[in-house]
Length: 114
Length: 115
Image 1 (tube, rainbow over the protein chains, first blue to last red):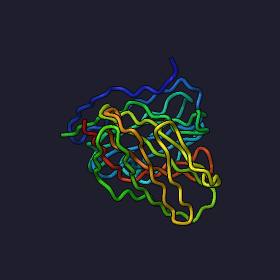
Image 2 (image 1 turned 135 degrees about the horizontal axis):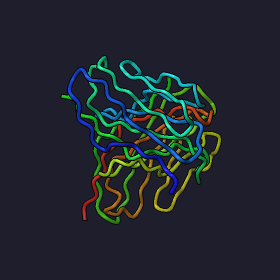
Image 3 (image 1 turned 90 degrees about the vertical axis):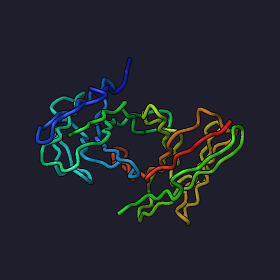
């Protein structure tokens, strides 16, 4: 089965701890993306990567870091420097689908930091 | 910078009726794409329909169609014969012409469907 997997679905952490969110795809896509979703604010881009070993900051990259060592994996680390880390995080990859190139989303991870 | 605005935080519709969700955007680009995504309670983002800016014809996908007014920078979604399963958050999104560029989202419209 092809698709994007994000694990875990729910994640709880104490304030001051770094936490890494997993995103894996077996679709052989070059481009991958991380978005953050907060109530009433839609989705905002954190980081994206168009090829292996290369990534660019999005609109809200402060307090986050990423790596892209393998084509199929694009993990996101939420560091202790992120002031409001509690949110829903969505990973996406670019796929050539019935609409042409489109972003295909994973199921998301809900991160709660207390 | 490009922006996407959805001015209706919530909408409701009776089952089998038609509803239109509004979206406006701002860009100075000539080559771009517009999308409507659906996010049901499962929170999985599902692409509903897409419009290329260079196409004058409005996109249609079964019960979903758009009214694309390029000069007015307006991109509304019409849902015909609404079904209970259409209840969800709907997000309008913009992307520049380069295929792997990022999506810029509006703040969403929550659609309720009443039997």
